[in-house]
Image 1 (tube, rainbow, N blue to C red):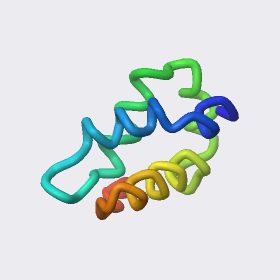
Image 2 (image 1 turned 30 degrees about the vertical axis):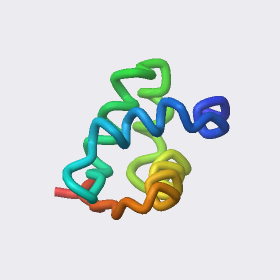
Image 3 (image 1 turned 180 degrees about the vertical axis):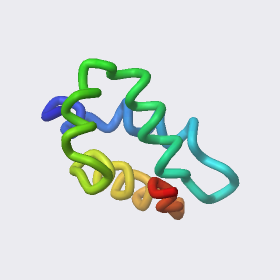
Image 4 (image 1 turned 120 degrees about the vertical axis):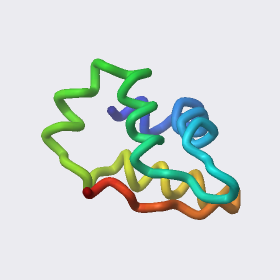
Length: 74
């Protein structure tokens, strides 16, 4: 998880996959990251929705001027 949080590459790819217009779906971005990094599944499951990865997705999206839809909860 530490390496993922230090590198914006996978997170930016997730944002690119989850964007709809000017809005990034946080649910889709996290799902994309989970498919790219299955080794983090257990750790992400333990952290739940409020975790450093979600925060990093929001920060990277904000730097590109995109809004983030917080759609993790049903």
